[in-house]
Length: 388
Image 1: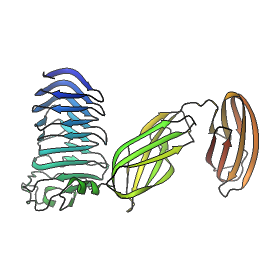
Image 2: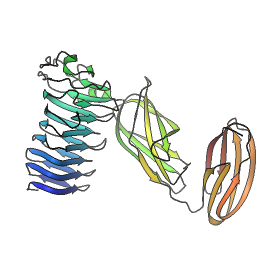
Image 3: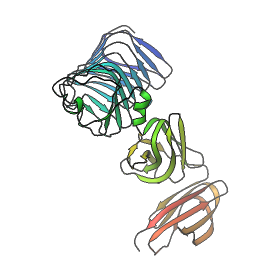
Image 4: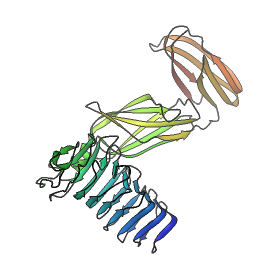
């Protein structure tokens, strides 16, 4: 691909590889690298006004990348996204947003956008050979905490302004690194509020600072009227367990399950959870990671649309349960118990095709389990009575 671009959108599809031989994106240019795709940048590249690179796959270059438009953006958009580059310069109007892994040689920060040059999501890492100059106070932000900024080289880094005010950012420094220079070097060697981890001589050590390195998280609707959740991690450090969180609006989440974690691992770990109670047609899920010290971090949010089965569906409704039957006649066993296992009601229902409301007459406050079972599937609803 040999041209300088304006007013263009370039999409590299999964499985594709593109070699880019341009020196600038001038204005209104968007490049999307999809998962499974690779972009090779073969020249020094400047991103000017209103330009962006959105990376879900892999971008490789040994050349110099400059962000200087207002705005100019690099979005490393997922945990699996990787951007390996030569030198990186961020000027006024530029910003790097990282949800995955970024590696660069010399990093120069002269400005940013809204007082921020680099924004790091939770459980992400950036690896630099050297900070050539940091001229913007608190240029690196980790608002969700638990992020790692690794410096590979031992030469002195220059901090004319402190690197960060984010206490969740860990700066991982190599053995024998020279003291920083510049006007802000006296403040924690120029790193500001960050925690310094010394003798950090490999990416593995930087990854060990992060409780979890996420690889993927997905949710799929199954034929048995259940949602199948799967997630995987590339590494885990002091990881106690995962909580499965569910929401009907994408904002307010409830804890619906708990899975033990690997604890300590540098190998791919895969986890599976099945949720057979869907309270609405669109359901949102996220995973909360909890380490042994009690701190936590979160996965991305995924949403799925509930698909009807060929037999029946159920959902709690005020004062009872609503059952939708998709076949002509359904034989359904209903069992209502308290949390101690005491059976409060047990009956067999013969339901015709359509919607049915089954009242649950409960007057005592507490938690209850409603179990529904047909020949092909079964489902349990947990609910609470808070007033009578």
